[in-house]
Image (cartoon, rainbow, N blue to C red; front, top):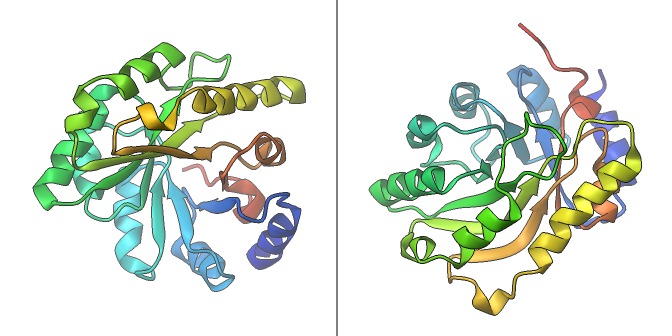
Length: 224
């Protein structure tokens, strides 16, 4: 597996050079992450807290770690001190816990709110009405130790490109439906994290500012 060559190929295919590439390193060994680091990547995504906290101390300190998987409230405390961005905040209860842990260490923890856009029950996320209630409600204004940077969504796992495009467009339109002036001071919806190895090109066309790519860089996931 030539990680550097894969990265160069992906970078050259990014229609928007300002779109941030997050290398999804879940299940991959430290040596693979180090190879991607040496090829210039600084943003890495993990989907399990245990794996993230095991890897981080053994790799360069300037890596920006992204928590991209489903996050349980009782695990927040382990990553709150150092995580660069939590992508999958899918409930008000989880956001409250992140704020609580951020307060303990006097750190504003950057987050994205996960929106359910796929026509699959297995995906997590808020719907449009829940997002509106959260962003325009009073509780979020008192959360001084979280920063909402944008939205995240995962499209349906399908070969139907128009289905995928429709879902990504739906997320962008939902984001754009909010008047920035009506949002709390700790909310800025600039980022759209959408797109993975199989659909990132469509995601970028639909306005993604962050793509989460794993298998196209590192090869298929290692299942234990």
